[in-house]
Amino acid sequence: MAAARRGRRPPGGRRGRRPPAQHRARRRRRRDRLPARQPPGRAVIPPAFGDTEGQPVACYDATAVPHSASRMREVPSLMADTLEEIRRDCFEARAGDPGTIVAVLVTPVRSDADYGLVFVAADGPLGGCGEASMFAAMLVLGSRPEVRLETGAGLITARPSGEAGIALTMPPGSPRIDAADVRCEGRRLRVRTVAAGGNVFAAVSAAELALEISAAEAHVLIERGSALLSALRAAAPGPARPNMLLLTTPVSSARTTSAVIWGDAIMNMGPCGTGTCARYILAVEDGDVVPGSRLAHVSPFDNAFTASSVDLGSPDGPIQIEISGRVTVTG
Image 1 (cartoon, one colour):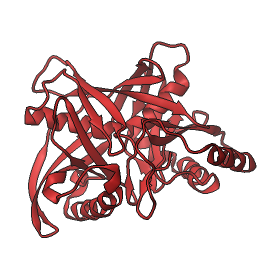
Image 2 (tube, rainbow, N blue to C red):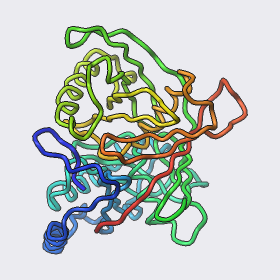
Image 3 (cartoon, rainbow, N blue to C red):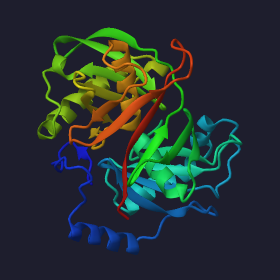
């Protein structure tokens, strides 16, 4: 499934919709003609492709590539050459969809993890991705009841959940929300910044921008959302600088719709796993969700994750969120 991007018509929002058969056959033929690139002297196993709740994803196995990291956050810089080869293979040699998020399996640092996991997008490494984590988990679970994936944000525990479903218990994170009034597009906006799963989100109410969160408005959302994210990034200091924009709508009957804008004018087709965690944190802060209860987080294309929080025994401490969704292998 293609990702929504500026200048391209996004597909409809039917859950799990696949490209027409002739397009799938063309992609298979193209992949057959172009063998996977490998870093010199390194073994990177050819990838798998799929979608998680409509979001295009891929997974490469680079566990044979050694690294000397003492923390998982060090891996992207220590394996920079390998990750660049993977990026080029996915997005150039294989002409992958520019909205694809790639999960790269690596050797974990922690002894209690089964795999390490880092993420690559068309413009380089990415802090985290729930959809790609679900896809990687589905590929490596086999008959095991669960698998533990170490990421830069912490340990993710994945397990099967219903037919073609995966549930992820995300790493514990801070429930802290920083709020500021920002003047943009000639109006004053309330911007709330929250970190989740390795990404930093700037959350803005779509109503404040007079935007409708729907597939029909995808190009408007991408154009205005990308401009707003660029402005917010330029104004924010170092670690507080957001790499993703979360355009939100109110919670009603334990359900809410958001648009997630990131990268080079990309809007998620899926509901965004780390964005779902951020939206849950905001909903708890606003009193729209009681911790432990469920929230359906829906993309503009009507693809949804279900989220709830895990009781860590401290109401004022870290928050841990579980998300679940459906995964499909397409190639």
